Image (cartoon, rainbow, N blue to C red; front, side, top):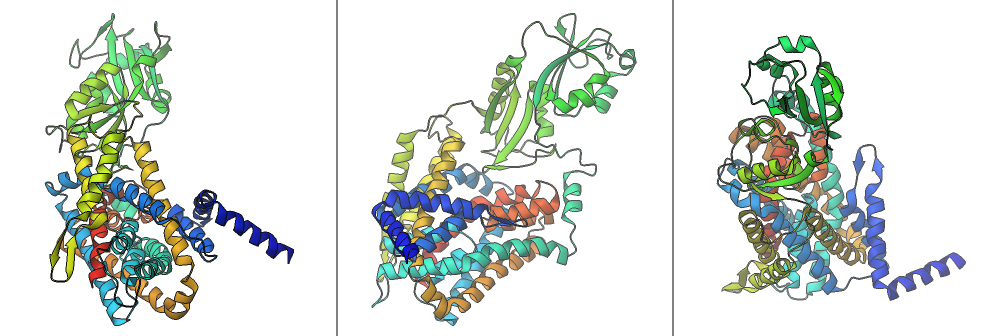
Amino acid sequence: MEEITTFTRFLDILHAQPVLTLFLILGMGYLIGGIRIGSFSLGPVAGVLFAGLFLGHFDFRMNAGAQAVGFALFIFSVGYQAGPRFFDVLRTDGLKYFLLALVVAGTGFSVAVMATKLLSLAPGTSGGLLAGGLTSSPTLAAAQEAIRSGQIKPPEGLSADAMIGNVATGYAITYIFGLAGLIAIIKLLPQVLGIDLAKEAKVLEGEDGAGAASKPANVAARIYRVTNEAMTKIPAEQLQEQYWDKTSVVIVKRDGEILRAGGGDGFLHLGDELHILAPVEYFTTTVAKFGEEITPDTGTAQFKETAQIVVINKNAIGKSLQELDIARKFGVLLTRVTRMRMEVPHTADFALRKGDILTVVGPHENIDLLGKELGHVEREIAETDMVTFAFGIAIGVVIGLFAVKVGQLSIGLGSAGGLLTSGLLIGYLRSVHPTFGRLPDAARWILMEFGLLLFMAGVGLRAGGDILETFASAGPVLVLAGIVVTMTPIFVGYFFGRKVLKIHPVLLFGAITGSMTSGAALSVVTGAAKSSMPSLGYTGAYAFANVLLTVAGSVILFF
């Protein structure tokens, strides 16, 4: 009895303190999502959903305004992130990833509609079924907002709140298999088809794997003096072929002057100085063979500035890293390439796309020269353009208000489509004019993550009130429908990608996970491939999938 009383008092405190309740749900969600069973974990989104379901069962609810703010932050950030790539990919060979994302989204949409009709599911459940089966948070957000904003009218005898509840419970019941099932299928399908992803990835990277540059760690700037006479008898071209890793920066100085490529007699001389910017391992395994390290007259810190360069210039788009020859031509070390916030392998034949971000290390002036060649240099600037951010969301909401009457239907983008459109345009304009709409990676991540989890906490609280009753009456049927919605797009997407689009299997499996916006499934593919190559396929499809699945969340409720 005492334990029941204590628990009741605790619930009373939470009911009186909504801020405490919200952040308790978020904290619990991260703890639950971080629990690992083997290599599987739910992740923070599912964790917050479960925490919300638990408290929702005790009649906790979130203020509609707070959930709407989370929704706006999340959807706008999704559009902003996709903007630079979305329009660029449409004009390039990325069209095949658009088609793949369209087929996967269209297949899931069709299956969800048919299941809703055949099983006579409650109004609104189709949106939750599609969102849960494809583990797509934008779909869920768009479906609920379409009802809340009045874009979708509930049938007679059903309130908007009840229909929103059907979306939430449909999502909650189908999401777990959507997540676990997707990961399991993506893991097993290559084995069933007899595809060795690790072998295929190595072939894709290059037969010897030399092109698969990884992120250098512990970068250092050091100077060595050539004292090994044997190295002075080897022609410079042979030295480069045998000892240069193609990414480290190596500058030869003789009598205080930089020796240009092809200069001198083509050989190193005793006493030459090698000024090198490279990972520490390169010094111990290679450079030490040339001679002894010497202490520079001045510090080397000025040679180790780190900056990010955003690819914008038309002349740079489409060029491979081998063509750019960054280390040799610009004297900077490339440490990382990200596309759509996803790190991708920077192989020699890796072609740059608009919006790619290169992290480089080197002298300030050298970085500026590379920046002029590629686009825009971003240094440690933390400010967010709050004017553009705030008005961007406001404009997105206004866009969503416009609708065209077709008979009894009111057709428009809705809040989700409006915010997504505004985010896409501002993200794209930011890539064209780098000083406009600044939203640093860390700021975008927290806004997008916090917005999503704030929204997801509201979903869990709303669904928790009647999820047990819904599961008892329609749970098994919903789970079965969710399984079909999850599995069918994977198989259709694979067949279409291989037979029609001719996408390499390593890239295709990454693209399928991108088409279903599942970062967890991508980690399974990259693990099986022992390479980050699948992430190229993921980023190709991800930008389109977010847009298509957001639109699908609103449209499916018309059926």
